[in-house]
Amino acid sequence: MSEIITAVYSNGMLHPQSPLSLTDGQTVRLQVLMEESSSYAEKIIQSLVAAGLVTPPQHKSDVEPVREEAWRELTQRLTASGGKPLSEIIIEERGSM
Image (cartoon, rainbow, N blue to C red; front, side, top):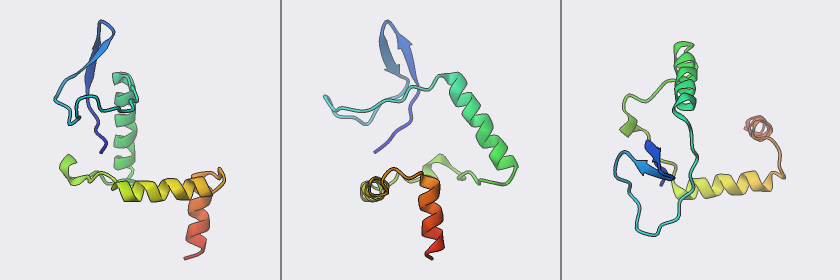
């Protein structure tokens, strides 16, 4: 399961602003985005919404995380592609429909 959280960096440690659904000793991977970065990303999303290119969910709870099975399948397909860009894979799949 993936989670996006906000944390504060202080004295060499990240301090989450809300409780995490992790077990003690569980290993996780982190991607650190500065608030400026997330603000920039939010502006991009707002521009896409304004242009009618994307439709945001009504509520954040409406977004379901990707199932582990689907994640593994996608990973296998991308690995089997031999390093082709995702755009090429999508175009090939659309052509075979």
